[in-house]
Image (cartoon, rainbow, N blue to C red; front, top):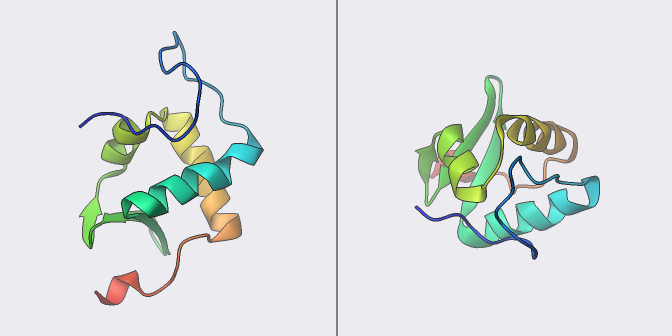
Length: 90
């Protein structure tokens, strides 16, 4: 799968491109528009795409995130809970 473009600027960096606090809502909106959802569960964030569970490593590779950035994204989701509820019942 190719990497999703959710922000402007160059995509090729020697190290992971920084994601600032103001960029998390933009990333989450792009994820929602593509059909990706992160649901908070007792065991952590469970990622769904089209009603199917997706591995965090796949989320990382498609969205161009480092493991540290995914951890920061998870922390943002725990605090703000930006995804709609009810996907678990599908």
